[in-house]
Amino acid sequence: MGMRAYMRWVMVLLLWTLCLVSAQPAAATAFPLATCLVRAAPGMTAPTLFKTPERFDCTTPQRRFGPGDFWVLSQPLPAAQLRGTSARIGSIWMTRIALYVRYADGAIRHVGVTPKTAHEILNLGAVLSQPLPRHDAPPVRLLWHVEGATNLRGVILQPVLADHGEAATTEIVRGALYGAFAGMAIALIVYNLALWGALRQAFQPVYCLLVLCLLAYVSTSSGAAGQVFTGLDNNDRQRLNILFLAASASTALLFARSFFERAVFSGWVRPLSSAVMVGLVGMAGLWVMLAPRAIHVLDTGMSIAYLGFIGVVAIILWRAWRVRSNYLWLFALAWGAPIVMSGLRIASSFGMVEPSLLVDNSTVIAMAIEALLSSTAIAYRILLLSRERDAAREQEIAARLLADTDPLTGLLNRRAFLARAIGRPGEQTLLIADIDHFKRVNETIGHDGGDEVLRAFARALRSALPTDTLIARIGGEEFAILVDASTSVSPCAIRDRVRGQSMPYDITVTASIGTCTGPLLHDADWKTLYRDADRALFEAKAAGRDRSRSAVSLVSAA
Image (cartoon, one colour):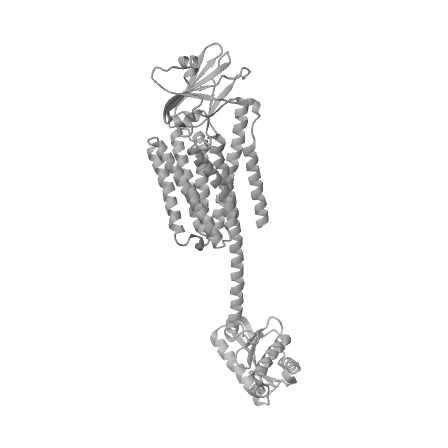
């Protein structure tokens, strides 16, 4: 696939992903709920709290209350609210959560889940969607009792009252989004492993590990892992989510180290990136082992670790710009979205940005963009590798040609001639041609003129012989010609062509030729064939030059 075609497919996938994310169900079927909070105290009951809403704090941000047990009261529900609805909230860390529903006739019903049973109401997007208990009268208010809340982003996150149609639509949209990401991730892994089998580049298995970590992160952050593995504790799912996100960030740095040119990570940048990777994985490990103890300290530590990640990414991009890396622009695009979303998540953890399901789940989109554009970077790297290999192959061929070719005449040299000649099946005819009185030529027109005579002599041989003939310069003015014995080659025609060849200073050049026919399967055959042809050449020169003789018949061809 060409680079342009690949980029078009990447843009199509990105646009489709963004369309899925931006797709929202009809607003009329989802009703956001405002909430008020009170810390739980002994003696508090749902009926009493429903009757005394003034006890709740509706102005202080929930996260300022810290961890503990809480009661959360919703605003009065709309009078026209349809029956068959669900109360949806973002998944949180807790030991138990109970939902109390007060109906218009004064009845109160409740349902509850624990981390062990949360999978029963866990939807994609890590949303707990609790259907309201059936009752003849319409619901008028909701009350949640949350025990063991860590309250990192809030006690009740983004509560929404939605009918079953809206819930089903949202589940379909999110299922399409996460399914598209999973399919893309699996395809990228298979594609790059297949390429790795052929190219053996170190960055390819690291990239596959990166995509695998992203896939694991998405499966836990989306709640899909909780739906598939029903025995998975919801709090443990959140532990895995923290671990896989840190692993994804660390593997992204490792991938950059194996992908960028060595100069980008020279000096202090390499140990700094190693320290950031260790810090990310180490803090995530502490979070997994110690949570919920000192959860706010651990969360702050994770935010600082991700600040370090953003910082080292900026340094890497700066260093890549300094060394004029070929891959800077692709990595700047690929890491742009994750850096922005990480910044939003960090700002949310420090209370600078209000938490929302969009901010929490947009990390998936950022990771999808990163995976796609990183894959584009790999495609670009492979394109450059192919160009480098083509150039190296051309240089190798040129070097081989130079090694096999006589630099003056362009014919084969002795070594290359023997390599191609010895082992040819069947009877072979060897002709040894020698320029007559070449020493006199050099003395008459100089060595430069003699070199030009050699070049002209080589052109005469090439024009007088079939294209598949082996022709070599094997000595100063001595040339070897080899053809299959079944091919008719006339030494007389060769000598005529030499005499008619245009020479420097219009001098006339002649040649003597000795021939011999025989097998040429081994080195010993060559020695015999050459000795006999050379003897025939000596006979031709002794007969007055510009002659040809055969080692078999020694009949003049003049």
